[in-house]
Length: 141
Ligand SMILES: [Zn+2]
Image 1 (cartoon, rainbow, N blue to C red):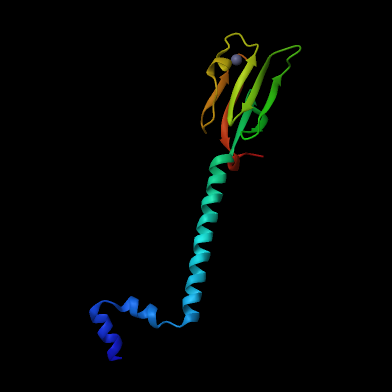
Image 2 (image 1 turned 120 degrees about the horizontal axis):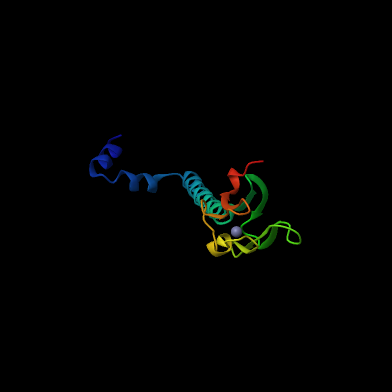
């Protein structure tokens, strides 16, 4: 009793505690520490994954969702009828989306260029086409 009182007064209680702890207890603390480190690493990796690949490119025509493309996979999608009518070609490359080609009157959608961040949008008003980035988690069925 007097011993611990002494150490408390000198302010070296933690070191004293550690020194006199049973080996088993030390091992347990060590293991828990390792587990904590691993779970933190796991969380960071998971978070990186989500922020890295959690986006999709959504294409709507006149308000109707007609295509959803993964922003992490290069792809090309023809929206509309390229042979006989209005069309826009949506291209996904290197984590970015753009309208690479369209036969609309003003070419605004083509000239808009690439989008890659959530909330960015490409609009083709003549065709009623919208292309925008969305978080995969928020994807509606
Ligand atoms: Zn257009």
